Amino acid sequence: MQQLAVSHSPTPARVESAVCRGLGRQAATHLVAISSLVARRPGEVVFCEGDDAECVYEVVSGTLRLYKLLPDGRRQITGFPSTGHLLGLAPDGEHVYSAEAVTAVTLCRYPRASFNRLIDSVPGLARRLWAVTSDELRLAQDQLLLLGRKTASEKVASFLLMLADANDDGDEIALPMRRGDIGDYLGLTIETVSRTLTEMKRDRLLALPTSDSARLLDRERLEALAGGAHGASV
Amino acid sequence: MQQLAVSHSPTPARVESAVCRGLGRQAATHLVAISSLVARRPGEVVFCEGDDAECVYEVVSGTLRLYKLLPDGRRQITGFPSTGHLLGLAPDGEHVYSAEAVTAVTLCRYPRASFNRLIDSVPGLARRLWAVTSDELRLAQDQLLLLGRKTASEKVASFLLMLADANDDGDEIALPMRRGDIGDYLGLTIETVSRTLTEMKRDRLLALPTSDSARLLDRERLEALAGGAHGASV
DNA sequence: CGACCGTTTGAGATCCTTCAATACCAGTGG
DNA sequence: CCACTGGTATTGAAGGATCTCAAACGGTCG
Image (cartoon, rainbow over all chains, first blue to last red; front, top):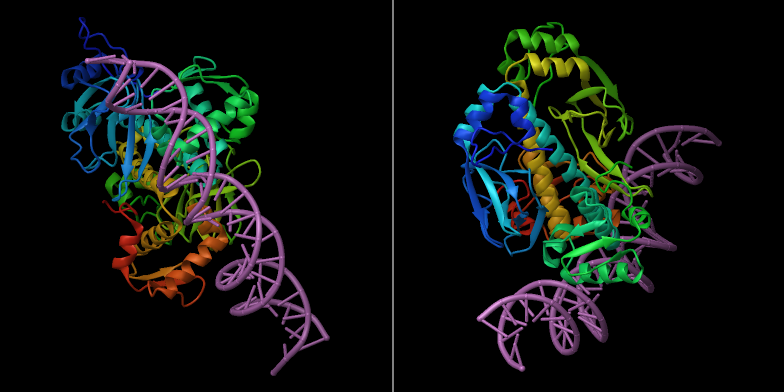
């Protein structure tokens, strides 16, 4: 996990994240000192690609979408970060993607300058951030395989299994994002996503109690469909 | 840049890489001490996805392809690392992609255990590796946009511009990889790559003196075709 | 209820793939 | 020197997966 957020609850010094515990009491206190909480409602923007990256964010609650745009408006969603994920971590000057709230979200915000000083002064933090970024890179490379070489059904199956693994609520999945978001994540259109889900429902691979939730009915066949590497190894 | 390699030439203590200079003489000497050189001929494998990641590599010369496979053999190439790039950097246990030589290559190999100890003992190294990995992540995210949302022509234009930027030989580009490699990098077939290149030649966008080299004739139109983000910002 | 927004479904068009043949190029042996 | 061979690239024709355009459906909220 990549948790870093510190508590802003009544007991300010209480540390919730694995990283903070790893860093020791003093460093954790520093993190609390430089952080602040921000909230966004569904659809609201947190930051845009090209903005000066003045802050690093950690998701405290809710789900966001990260995306890049082409000049004509075509959109590629690169991820749906939720609780515990870090945003805007790249060490240089500008955000390289935009971030919007999918659900209502709360974020823990760290000013970049303070954050960078912390990296220098806290032993182990740089290595921790490296590990977090490496894991993101690994996921991005899995996504390259998905986008470049998988069919629509394989993409959707991979996506559902990825969500199931992340939510670890067994086979019950929340789909807070819209069909269009899913399409822009998988390199498909809204219609193809919808048709593929309908087809999977017809084939008894899954149930769609509502349009924003799903239940996996046949994980084995879904995994076969997804091919290797929906996040897991081959 | 992400250079780290140390010299194995007659003067063993001489340090060639930017990182080593940044790290100081003593750390650089440590790097030399744990490294060894390996060579591979075209088509030979350096390591495979799923192998224990016993070593980290830096490319000293030549070009490689990194790729992931689906069970049925479909392939997605994730990059063509060349001189100065690091391979197998992920901090955990297994390689997450395979690496093969495209041209003849020489690599500088660091045993992972020693490398990890070095990270702990050399201040600044972890942060440096974080920066390197962040940059790879940024490129991977650009590639997500390309694979998910660009057309064949846009993909090929982006690819050519990316190579031109990397080689910085102006508008002369070496294409050491085969058409099939380009296709598997761009999520296209061999035939589509070939047709697209032919079409660009017909449109006077580029010249193809041989099948493994190209000259950009109209960078402006190519950049317009590539859309934003072929590596550069929008 | 009725408007709105997102999803689903349908029909036709298109880009890219697939399958197949031809061209090209370098190396080898006659 | 030239034919032959193997590998890669190019070109052609046909098919198909996905997209586009368009309409119908369904839930939510005032």
